[in-house]
Image (cartoon, rainbow, N blue to C red; front, side, top):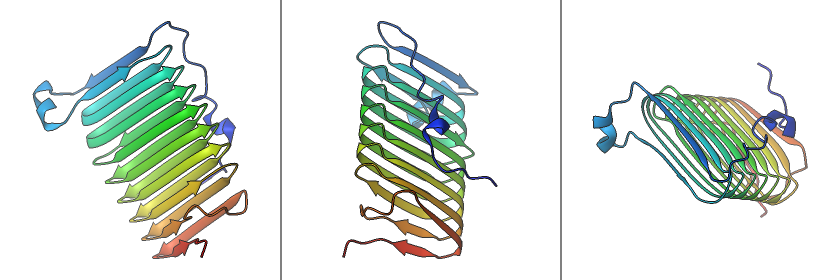
Length: 223
């Protein structure tokens, strides 16, 4: 399987400028959705304030999606298929872009972007996976891909010009990345029960971590 290093080109489509509308644009498409199940938490919601924000939600099955946008020229897509998936995105600032795609059942994707020109892509193909991304600053990029079940990926970026990519294939893998400016990491986990934690420490720029097998642990600490 080819796993290219993260680059801005990988997110070029996400970074395309939103259509020039004076207000906001929201598109919601729900297929095979039973309104009677809304009380059980199966619903879609878009709340926008500001100018030229664009949001799209597409759901097949009984899933939950929420988008909150404030500021200007923000862009967000959510696509869900299966049952019991949950996606939430909050964007504030300007020219931020995000994509959340979930397939199968019981996945959770959380995204928060604050600042300018941040880009994020979250893709989950499996069950009971969790991705969390927080971006504060400018020109930060993150890609999180999960294939399997019960994997967890958490990325926190502050400052500017950070890039991070996590790819998890298997089960019970956990990756935690903290970046504070100008850092480029890629973490690939293949197998079961692997763990990586950067603890906010600056690694060599361009660092790639690959874990295979069962129960491998890498913990970077400033102590």
